[in-house]
Length: 173
Image 1 (cartoon, one colour):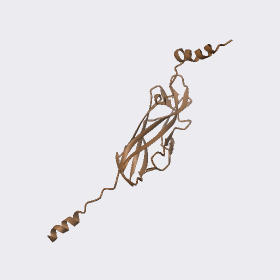
Image 2 (cartoon, one colour):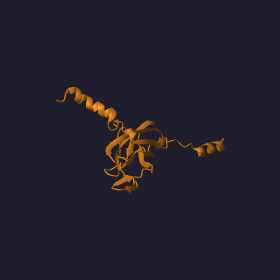
Image 3 (cartoon, rainbow, N blue to C red):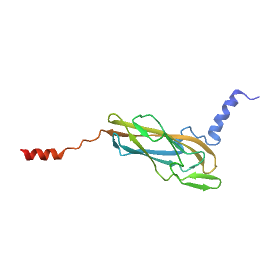
Image 4 (cartoon, rainbow, N blue to C red):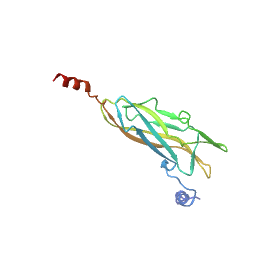
């Protein structure tokens, strides 16, 4: 008869002596570097969200199921054409190895947006990358996601100084 102690000890034994247990912290599969260019954007103008996805050395990122960049609607002052982008839309090249097709993630992701803030300030863009990681050695896979966020500042449109008016005033004196 199996006792309660035995049932509780089996997971502990597997944790320390069995297959490696990966934490729920999915940043062990990829790193994401996100930034905005330019750092300061005039209200009414466009900026570009730049995302670089870097898989760790033990996994490759599968092209199926679909790789997706999903943007959060956390800042209503920043407008994207849509809130998600697939690998095919982002035009990632693929590499076939045996039965698996992987994404070539050497390319930086560029997503344009417009700033519609009523006043200047600091804005946050955040989202997540949904992907399937395939482990190189044992070929197991996991569909998961990793989050990212970045900040930028908006400013009011700069007023041009009227140089002509100053020159005209000098002549009249």
